[in-house]
Length: 122
Image 1 (tube, helix red, strand yellow):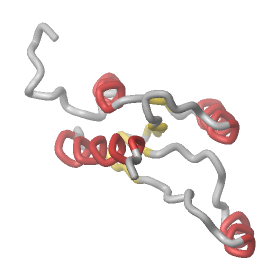
Image 2 (cartoon, rainbow, N blue to C red; image 1 turned 120 degrees about the vertical axis):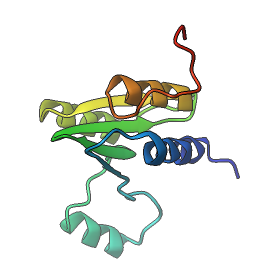
Image 3 (spheres, helix red, strand yellow; image 1 turned 90 degrees about the vertical axis):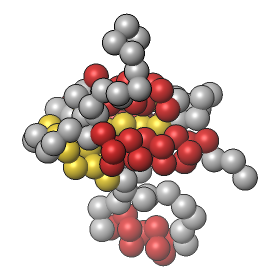
Image 4 (cartoon, rainbow, N blue to C red; image 1 turned 30 degrees about the horizontal axis):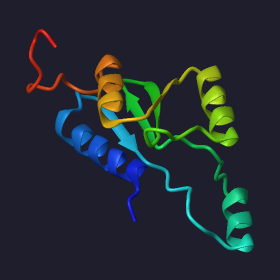
């Protein structure tokens, strides 16, 4: 079964490992998946929040949040609420619907070094 969002995220993580500038730390919070009602209640009581973005990135004291979607994917209500709350708290947030869009966003944010494979005119 194809999972385009996971494929995009896996590729983004590879770029983060290879091209991050200094003082960058990133992680994924694995909130998804099927859980029993009891396990879900336990996780909720421990602080698990719905809608957490796919990648949380810290760069020199600033928080960046990147939500990845398949090309025609849409944010669900909990993601909209969470991204708005993160913005309100000072985080920089974005949603990307392709690998190229994600990589450009990370380059614009100064998290990734420019891809050496791109020409200066591009």
